[in-house]
Image (cartoon, rainbow, N blue to C red; front, side, top):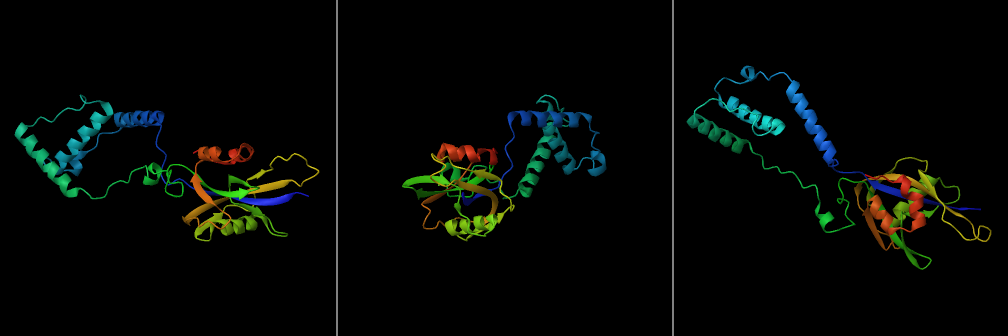
Length: 248
């Protein structure tokens, strides 16, 4: 009779949008040039008073956008005197200084990435990362997803949730996505007749808040990507889980 185990694939979803590839950047720039070439001229005289500072600011910004789309020699300069042009530019710079906000964009690379802090949930903001734990089994240190035995008459998804709390603490706000397992793993054994088959059912879960508080049976934990998981787990385990993890 097989021995049933349940394991939780605890996932932290991406925090950031993925960076566009060179092909995507070229495609978006091409589409932007097409839209700019085909769009109707903007009626600036309807929205801005002629000769006003706002009109001069809009024209300067529009010339900048034209140069970005078509090159530095495309946009024509307004036929104005150098003195007036300098005065308008000074006024525009003053307006930009007044409207400037102190808000700054956060870097896309978190300090935990540069520090190689695998305990941080803020690492790899553009990727899906998963929780691995390290513990002793048969005198050997192994990395795997949080796993435990299913109790007699216990629903599998409830057993998975129970083992997750027992091994990783209850300081996490987690959610088991479905009652049905998303994968199964049967480790190879030498003699099917002398020892029972161990079967592990994997359940997907999401973490919304909190952090792991390892139990006594857990030596270490790590939040890692799919490619980093391959480097830590054994080959048979990796073959059983690689197709249920996200490449992104």
